[in-house]
Each structure stands twice: as structure tokens, then as C-alpha cells.
Image 1 (cartoon, rainbow, N blue to C red):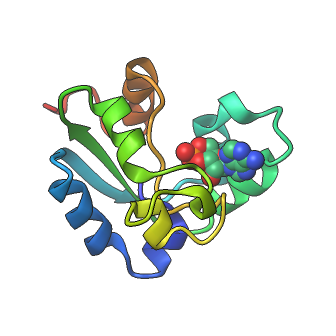
Image 2: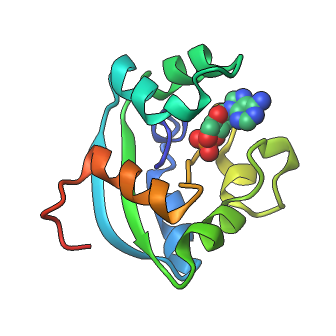
Length: 131
Ligand code: CMP
């Protein structure tokens, strides 16, 4: 997911180009906007963390771009590719280093397991879609 801050700052094209250069294939793309309730559900695993409220506010603050990506070992490959959660710690040249402005507005989200990738994809794409 390209987060609201990166969308608002005009980085959709640059981020998608980088993802493609990284060898990921786009299987589905959708621009959408999460309501507060949808953002709460999307990040339910973090509901007890101190940053949950501000994460939900930031994720529901504007449009996002959701995508399903394909690559060998895609979940781990993508997490490695985008850089550390905090842009300040992210590898030089990574998406989060280039386009993240804070730990919350860290440009992109990536699923953390194959199981969660399926759950998260189902927020934006219906099960009839051919990934
Ligand atoms: P993301 O990959 O979208 O998954 C959860 C998000 O919580 C994470 O990126 C960050 O944007 C946000 N977040 C805010 N504060 C923290 C924190 N202290 N540790 C981890 N994630 C945080």
C-alpha cells in the first residue's frame, strides 16, 4: 500500500516505478481511501500499541494505492526492498528512505506474512479477482 502522505506528496508514479524495477509484478492495483473503521480493522494487530490512534488517523487521512505484487518469496523480498520501518533507519535509495517523512508516514506498507497478505488484499480486492 502506498500511504496517504506519499500519495499527497505526488510520489505514486515514482514508487510504482521503483517497485517494478525491483522485479515485482503488479497483479492488481486500486486507488482507495480507508475510513477510520477500516484503518482500525486493517491495523487491528497493533490495537494495543501506543501509536495505534495516530496510525489510524494518518492512514485514513487521504487516498492510498493498494496493490497485489508477485515475485518469488514476495512478502519477505518486498519488506527487505522497501527499507526499515523508520525512514531514518532505512537503507539509502530504498522507498522508505526516499519518500518516507516519519515512522507513520513511511511511504509504504508491506504485509508481514503470506497469510496476512491474503487478508490485507481482501480489504481492497474481491476474491473473484485473478491475481
Ligand atoms: P507499517 O508497515 O504500515 O505497519 C505498521 C505501522 O505502524 C508501521 O508501518 C509504521 O508506519 C507505524 N508505526 C508507528 N509507530 C511505530 C513504532 N514505534 N514501531 C513500529 N511501527 C510504528
